[in-house]
Figure 1 (cartoon, rainbow, N blue to C red):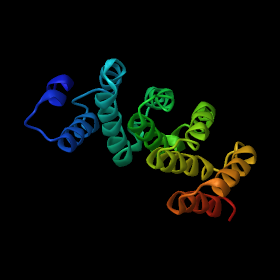
Figure 2: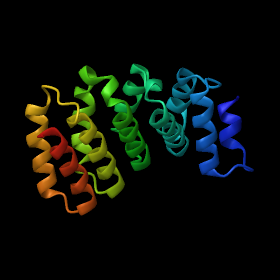
Figure 3: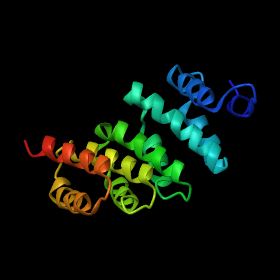
Length: 172
C-alpha cells in the first residue's frame, strides 16, 4: 500500500486514514521503517497523522514499538506542531516498558513539554511520564520529585490526576 496515496485520498476521512494506516502497520503491509521515512519528510499535519497511526498500532501491539519508533517519537517531542508533540508522547507512553534503559532523552523532552501552553501536549506528557514512573527504575529518584513539582503547578485537574495516579502506583 502506498502511504502517500492513502493519505491524499480525498474520499477517505482523516480519522479513517489514521485507522487504515495503523492497521497496515500492525499487519505488516506497511513497514515501520517506511512509515518513519515517509513521516520524516512530510509536513506537520501529515507527520502527525503518521505518528497517530503509530500510537494506535503500539497501543494494540506494543511490540511494534522498536528502538527506531522510540527514537523517532523522542525526536518529535521537540517539534513545533503541538499535535506532533502529543502524538509522539502517547507513542512513548505505549512503549516505554520495552525500552526502560533508553528513556533519558524522552524524559528530558517530556519534562520540557509539561510547560507547554497546550493542554493536550501537557496531558500527553503526563501520560508518558506517568508510564515511565510506573516502571520503577533508578531514574525515579530524580523523576518522582520532578513530577511532584510539576503536579503542584499544573492548573488542570485532569492532568494532575494522571500524575497522582502514577505516583500512587509507584509508592505502593
